[in-house]
Length: 287
Image (cartoon, rainbow, N blue to C red; front, side, top):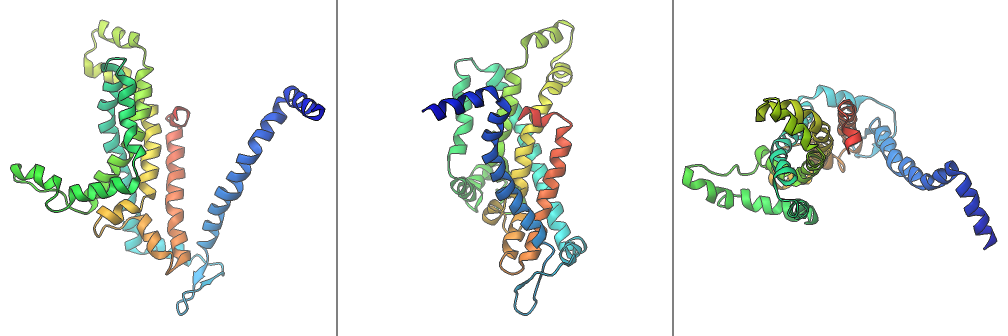
């Protein structure tokens, strides 16, 4: 008991030591498991595969990256994947803003917590259940066809539009919540002052609301962009013949592990660059 008392006293007097002991375990986990696995991934990207036995040959070579940058198919897959991630992010932002504005500024205060819970509810459902539900909606003769048939239209079917639509639905709550929080914290006095000075609704939105909410939009985009860029299950289920980085990596794991590792480094690099770009907007402090 005396040892515990002395230890508690030492930790109380030395906050830096206490902080070091608290952070040691998670930092070791981060360094060994997460950063270590990324290091192994990057190193294996420089290995090669025996064309006859398909065995990995641990010989240093840049052939995988050279093939990645010179083969048109791989370049198309990379640019298509980035385009899908950007499209999903843009659609989430456009859709999330009016929803968040209603939940944070228009709805009655007593209803706002319930609306936030309703927004979070889809996150509690299984990922596969949601994707297969969208597969049923978008399939021939499904709900999308039934709703569009009176207008002489049909559903998008399976392909790139279906992939973007499904990913937008999956990651939309991650965009709504940061924007909702920012709008909820927006002082009402600023909106009143803008109106008193003669600014109309659009000018108030552009000059007052948007600059203050933009870091939260960027924070939400970190989730929607990174999650969309690395997704490979949705495109397998509703993407038809569409190929993105995730499912190309998955298809190469058994056949050519070093090439799959080289492809796997692409989203890591893209996300790091994206995070550095978003850091300038204050997005990381808004997370």
